[in-house]
View 1 (cartoon, one colour):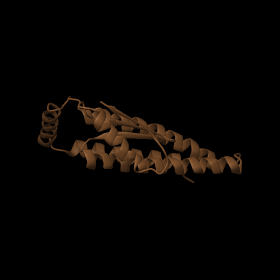
View 2 (view 1 turned 90 degrees about the vertical axis):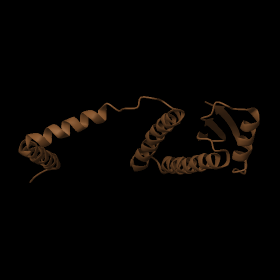
View 3 (view 1 turned 135 degrees about the vertical axis):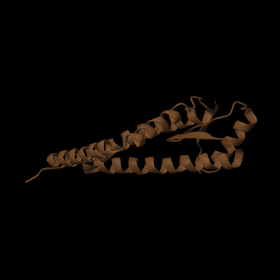
View 4 (view 1 turned 30 degrees about the horizontal axis):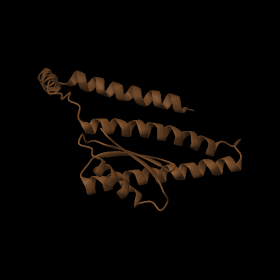
Length: 164
């Protein structure tokens, strides 16, 4: 009987073998044209950093922490040694995380639509942190953004706006 590890080994080995035969069977002209085309593409790399890269890095960092937290909660849900009350709490936290992610993305699109500003929003209980990618941040613009976000919630939220 073949176990999973042997099956994966055979599959990967056969893929490597097929690619090796294909590489050897390629004519020399095709190979040199592929290499020269690849080298010309690599010379045109843009190394500039713009404001949206900063927001993207914040989103990635946030996604990593959320995914780690979600995987921990899912492990506790699937663990048979965990009590039913702890499983219910973990399930409620997972639902809350999913709702917050949806609210964050809808608020980001609302700010983009209303003020034409790219933003990153993080919701943590009753605190909302907003980071705007704009250097011309004024108190008036920040207050308008706070009012716009507060209209989306029934309860009082503590909203902070930071311009980057």
